[in-house]
Length: 618
Image (cartoon, helix red, strand yellow):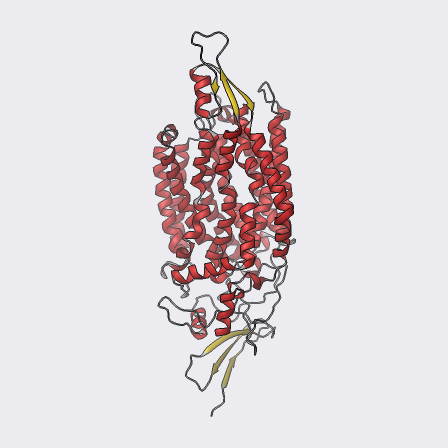
């Protein structure tokens, strides 16, 4: 019987892979594996120069998976070797030879690439390779476009609605942000269905942005009517923005997956930086800058010589402008950006099954619980503090100035927080910021409490509000960047879009689902009474004016006075902070510390029961 024939092709560079082809006497498919010459304890499989680095399982007599090491200074992720039991869309088994053939067919694959997983990450944007710089800026742009509608839905529009809706009704409008917390339901579809001609990610990004541009232009033409009828058509108004945010959430799935392959492995941590800078810029442009420039008083004071009764921006004009920007960027992306082609394709069912196996991992379940409860302590501060300041008499002009000053701090802190994640464990930064964010909620509580009784806001109090706002922004930004970096570190790039979306979705859900209840609690705990003026021709019996509609009827229609005897904001904020502190010290901190110390393979689908069974079967 003939002995196995081993043929080897090598390259003279130290980090180049070796292609080993094994033929046996059996009629089974040929197996091709890529092995590094510089480390015989691990195997790496490279898709292309920007693809993720993979740690494969080395076969042993007992079929176990060998342990490996990861350079803690790098954001490189190691992935399991694809099991021989993997199947294609038609249910046929895909051999490692077929998988490797698909890998080698990628246009950018070359044996001359440097695949050293221990290569140091770039320390600044200027140190990034030119291709990484271009791709980083592209990611920032795509995340920025997502942030524009999000900043309106979760920032400016609730402020503009405050004069017409109660806290509870604004809570109903916050349902418009829920698609970001529901995108996990359709993320496997985005990961599995795409056009080979257009590219795996552009197949979704281009049409989604096109639809978004049309929706923004339509909203711009109808914004004035929708705002005027918001109280009568609250659920339709909410549905319109819900649909727009749903488009952004779908685009976010594709961009998250693309981010894992656009940047080189050693610079993968910059993906979270691009996300933070892009989303922050888009959201704060639509929240801070728009809120400032749509305010007539702010516009007249700083930019006009003659007072007018409208701001530089209007909601309709702003929406229309960004609708056309969306369209221009989409056309440019479709024509100018060439996406790396791949033949790898998973069936929708297999992606859902893989996602379910990931969710069954014990460590992932613990992380999900952390995400769901970790933001309860900040809900009143994040969702109510600014609205309460406006309710007390803090002018929109001063609020616009506050958030406008906060804008450059948000951008700068997002960038530096991303760099800190390269030097400190992300979850340790996250826990430090968690405590700081609880402190920020207490400071905001005091800031609202000391609001001048006569309603006159002097420079000193304005500076207090700005300082409180910046500190809250700082802690929130560090938390967001740190947890995003941890997501990028532990996500399995083989199901990159779905894995990243799973983690980001649960994180978003933890921040959105309590919001409606917190806002309704403020109304429920508030006690306010409307009393008629001392001298009036039409006296009336005192009645409750805790809700915005009753307050408007009291002060505007009847000329009465609405006196608050118990403010539900203070009660709600104290409850949130206390609950947040208890959950942090009793559960979140020890659990997060334990998860941060886990090896990377503990987060892979292959380390679950089903994954181990698949490896043994292979």
